[in-house]
Image (cartoon, rainbow, N blue to C red; front, side, top):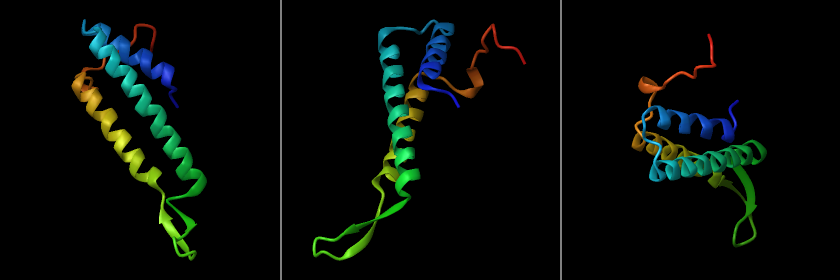
Length: 102
């Protein structure tokens, strides 16, 4: 699985290949990495606590609540996709690395 550093390097390289490595777009890549890390934290929480968890209601009764990490993970993923769209980085225009061979 890719880590944040490798993903950031890959995104920067793709911008460089498009001659679009300007500060604004590099900032969007930093935002992308932030959302990437946050999404991973949400996934970790879902694995630990599950989609729902037990809690006490205001009146003291045990209830089962939806884990907010489920919704947050979806929101973070959507934001990552929006950033890629803004950068015009899609599977159609990904350049391959010179040192990668099949």
